[in-house]
Image (cartoon, rainbow, N blue to C red; front, side, top):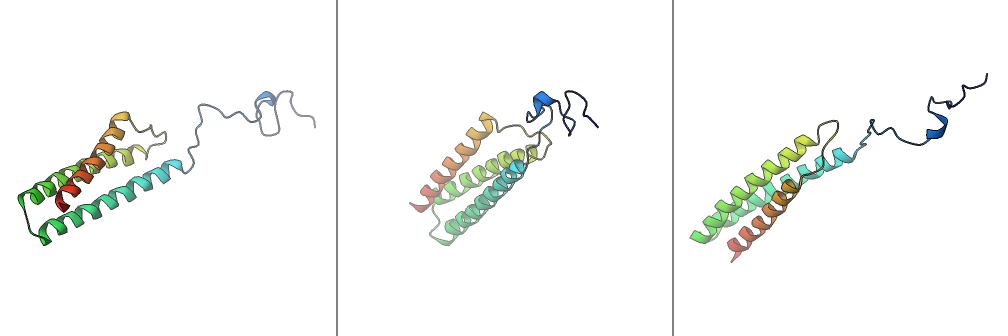
Length: 122
């Protein structure tokens, strides 16, 4: 009726009652939430791209507007590539953190899209 010395009732060693095993990782729902956030962001970008096309074609079409539209389309495609790569990497059992390059690309695409939007409005 006595327990083996050094082991608890759940099979863990007595000295390591609450210490997690570094080899076993339970990421919980955090990668899923991050994946959904990237998907929402790509959906928002798609809506912005559609509104940019509508704005460029509905108002007086100028060379600046068409150039900004073309550049925003390229930026949109670049952001979709970054987001797709990140979403795919979050699907693994041990997702890696976002690289510095990926973060800079996503931020750069956001700034470039804002600049293209400002060029279309003016």
